Amino acid sequence: MHIEPTATDRIVVVGGGQAGADFVAALRMAGHQGPVTLVGAEPGYPYARPPLSKAYLSGKATAEDLHIRPPAMYEQQGIDLRCGTRVTAIDRTARHVVLADGERLSYAHLVLATGGRARRLPAPGLDDAPNVHYLRTLADVAAMRHRFVPGARLAVVGGGYVGLEVAAVARQVGLDVTVIEALPRVLARVTAPQVSAFYQRVHTEEGVDIRVDTAVTGFAFAPDGLVAAVELGSGERIDADLVLVGIGLVPDTELAEQAGLAVDNGIVVDEYCRTEDPAVLAIGDCTSHPCGEHGGRRRLESVPNASEQARVAAATVTGSLQPYTAIPWFWSDQYDVKLQTTGLSTGYDEVVIRGTTETGRSFAAFYLKDGLVRAADVICSPRDFTAARKLVAARAKVAPEALRDLSVPLKQLL
Image 1 (cartoon, helix red, strand yellow):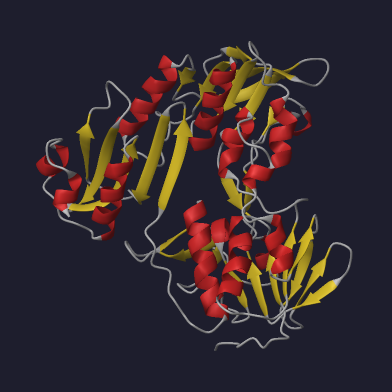
Image 2 (cartoon, rainbow, N blue to C red; image 1 turned 60 degrees about the horizontal axis):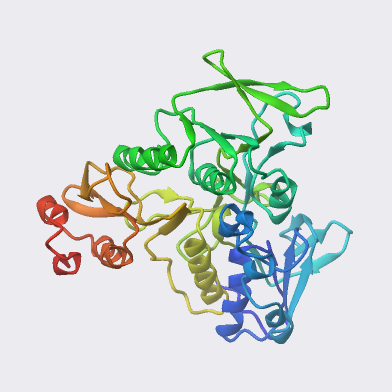
């Protein structure tokens, strides 16, 4: 069943991140003229999160540079923007949401773009230590940036993208950095061993002390409550002036769960971003959606996914169903190294390296399954990334030796 909004039906969006901001813009572009309210828990205009661990942390970008849409857009497009406001409950029967101050907002359609929060490290006293940081918001960066001074000792718990990006910024500022990863290699959940080895080499060359296959067993505290050292399973202590914990993201699904909506590693939606309730949609990092390429369900944490789901949801709300079919892609900036990833490598049975991972800082890794190109990690080669996206989208069957051959332009393999 589709609920067709009229000009007076309010659409309420919960979440002022990438997905929410892109949705309200897409909704107006799709022709919806009725009232739209965007409720965001953080103060200020919706902003992009990826630069937090890169350009914003380093001081190369300002908070204004991070705005997803020009602030004037919200007023020009008649968007009722409620910043610094939390939604505490959803009443699906009455079709309204309850705000923290008790106000009720009725809706014809509700769009949940609640995103996620940094996964916390469970350790006694850690949440009260002012020099232990997580990175998800502008406020998180503000809390840690004053500690980024030359010579300070930074311990990074977690060798994923956020941890490595922060490590790169810290080294460029002049901090002494140790990265502690419990798995046998950095980026183990998202890349092949060859790519992990490349990033470990790059960070080592830049002066980072990388500890893989290393468990954190506890923390030593100074009398003032600051963490003074990270304790490892080997019995060693890593002295630290500050600690950055980057161990993943937890999707914010509590509102959906309390409202009785299905949740399975994210709010369950179909290819049109619809939940089981025809009046409620969900988009962005908080969603579990069908994987058209490989079957099953997936939850993605990326700007392109949030933006594409925003477009799909806007089409759904305005009655012109357009399924989500986009091929995922991601990026990461560390030092002078730009990684661009297309597709999902899960389940690959062969990795083909184009170039070399052992010297230099430019190559491509192609992930194959049954001879078909499933995904690619492209390092410092925009031209190859453009071709790789097309190969992945086409599920091209390419001979591994052709992918390896640098004398053969990738575009010739399309």
